Image (cartoon, rainbow, N blue to C red):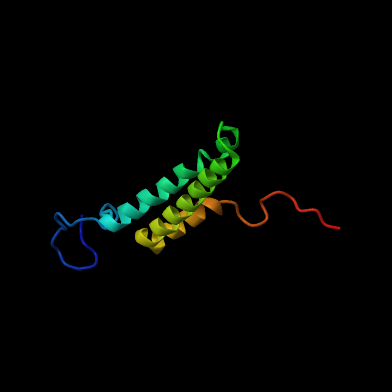
Length: 110
């Protein structure tokens, strides 16, 4: 194959194609990994909350346990978001905003 850009008579030999060269994935820093782990932990802390009212404990203990789990989940999420950086926060935000505007449930207009 001839190289038209050079306008010479030498054939093109072993030139890397720009299309096949995939960019190397960026390696996450340890802080970013810790932040992602905290975000995942925060989601896991929300899982047992609906079961707390059905436990055989005193009402004050249930309230303390539920409140402690909720506060811990929030602290873990926002601490993880700070450590992971703005890119991870954008990704997490996009998980909640997957629907495009206008494709949600219909609104009632009067």
